[in-house]
Image (cartoon, rainbow over all chains, first blue to last red; front, top):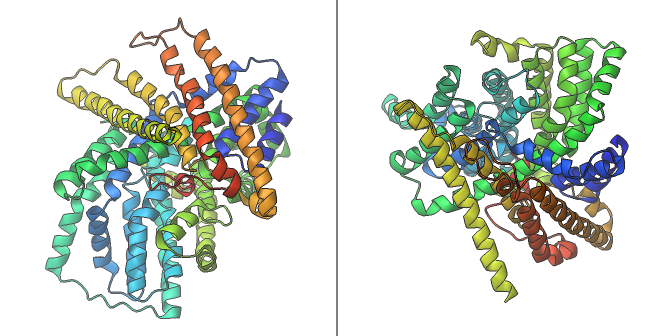
Length: 427
Length: 171
């Protein structure tokens, strides 16, 4: 069964079958060839894979981000960010990094970051004399913080695969790694802007102006506070927090910033439900796929083999990082989380690696896969949204990828970066 | 005639998704609000919303396919040249079509097998929820038929600003 499963999955994906269906077809084939279970078990597993209340946070966070990312809200955050750093050399670059990082606290995915404030920021940077390819590369590399700074769809799905961690704990754990990544991107921006002499023409805003801009940004920035405080103090579960975020976003957009019109709502809901369907279908079919792995005892065999190798935790983490980087080149983060985590997380636990630390290494690593060519979904989104060719965008990427890599190494070897905050807060 | 059928089906499909998502949000939100204002919560809220999410997933899958939003790796198509790519895409389309039909058949069996079970809170036959699968696979098959010519010929999907493969890949 296992052999059928893997061969079928690899052949089908190579041929260009959508990942969701490749997983379902190979699970069905494996059940058929194995002959021990009725075909109906595939449906049962697909169904159970998505029949979950915690998972409902996914559609709600998608909807909240779609409601928030339209128009003026994005502009408010951009102004708020650029007032602090806009006047420096490379200022708009820093403003880009800062506003994307702030926006990550509203959205649960990299998509919302890159397509919303990201594409707007690229236009502003180009107008100010930056090369458009550079601005786009900076945007896609920074949008990576979307799924790392809470809320995060990857984390919700990760917590469903590994019962050692909670959504709340992972949300808290994401802060420091997310900020580290943002700092690393700002550092690259500093180096490159100095080399290419991207000057700033923005005047430093007056104290009065800054106060007004900051005041306007408060309602938008309150969303992340609301979510985290709500979850931390048990006021609501992550799923409830996500639906509160939807209505908060609606109120912000409709009555505070007044950029949301009722007639735009169906389009926003349609887009959100299609995104939801595409994510959850992968979730359902990889549940069936993972079920075959489980009944065949693959996770146990893998953990046993790895434990027998007697790897030190550090060596194990290095091996996992290499495995995930290769995996991430070809695959999207979510199927990666769903298929690999049930296999790898128990081994990590057995080796005494903190589950939260391991989760952050996996999530950050797989998220990087979105900006590694040739199959980097985020690169395509940014390229399309900013009308830069993939070739130009890719040419600007190496320093950013290098910086990401350094952060990943840091996260791998310094567990406290991931575990300190959630442990201090009692998760 | 066929054109009209396609237009109506796509619009109906889209509106059902919109309503499901919005109603689902309202139910869960109302439940949170009620818990804090009256101390009571709606017993069926969680279950109903969860099942609506399952319907969104399977009813949405067909439309997502139509707009090319199911993430796939198409590097192989570029490697085998124009003619080869058409052959490969024909294989993919055939494989998907056959898969959808087989899945539809088996999921009908599954729904039939579960017709006497009921859900925990609302006590409705669970078959109504499982029915999302056969309906979903039927829609997938129909949407596949609508796009199959463009897909095999040029690797094209229907374009829409509401969905594309890259957006789905960046979630």
